[in-house]
Amino acid sequence: MRHTLLIAAGLALLGGSAFAQNAAPPRPKAPHGAKVFIVAPKNGATVGQDVLVKFGASGIKVAPSTDTTPGTGHHHLLIDQKQLPPLDQPIPNDEQHKHYGKGQTEDTIHLSPGDHTLQLDFADAAHMQFDPPIVSRKIRIHVK
Image (cartoon, rainbow, N blue to C red; front, top):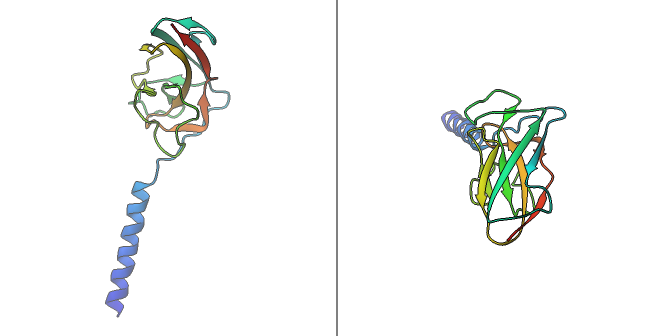
């Protein structure tokens, strides 16, 4: 009986550590006053299908995703997203969630004709959003 209890306790501990390993990484605290913003294009602009998007940041240092220094991070561009990605998971990397893990501060993106929204979402080296999230104002552009 004692042997069975020891095995059960050991399995419970192992299960707990496995759960902890699968838990989401903690969200870093946002530096006070940190902001990101889209420098170009301007809200309401009409642009061609190849759009130069320039990113700005203040109160936080832009760094490559290999830099794990607290208070640093990199840009992600959200295209046509109604809401932010889940806060307890890394930001996805796809056509609507572009990663700039080399510390880039601009990119030329290709968009289809029509209306689109753009928003920056700043994240740490693990692509986790800050707490609270550091996001730009969402802008609308028209692609001709």
